[in-house]
Length: 269
Image (tube, rainbow, N blue to C red; front, side, top):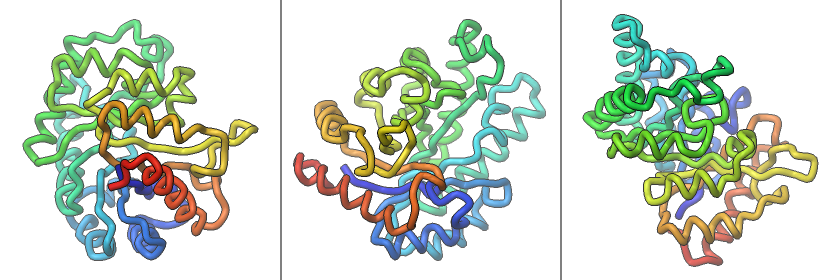
């Protein structure tokens, strides 16, 4: 396993072209690039990032998903075609940065019936997910569905239903989103199992506030043991919000904390 940082952790502090050099200077070896706007989707901006990423290996790209991901499921052919055009630009970004994975949220569960999942039409959803996964796969990027409280995978069981029919899709475990959803992260981890590609990690303090790993009460020892038990060997990407820490140098301290645990359990790569 290896430790990395999502540039989402620097949202509104540093733009991506500033975030990657900062993380590189801090000695971070792995990152997820959180592309935040239409102007950042596509090869031209990715080429700029490539020039500035230093020694960082980009594990994955992530977008501000409400901008076009829900429209990939739209029945209107023009709306859907436009969304796939933006997805293509995102794949161009991933290729330029050497990122093998795309962190995906999918639909936005805005309405109550959508939140409950009672209207989920899995035959149709599987067909849509298959189209999206195949589109990414033809561009040498793996679609990775993340558990997110307000998006497609907002409860255990959803991933399993889609994964039955979409063999080239993998999963992303987000610890904080599992906490927000009200389900234990273990339920998501068990469901994704060997198809877990990487994870977004964070800590939580005694007041229930998200913080950097090592600053709170979350049991990372247990998490690492569970990941080891399923044979996981991917990236643990620190993803917190911009007001969840003070100085940016604290990010490096958090990375060192997790690295020490990985070394302790003999899984540091």
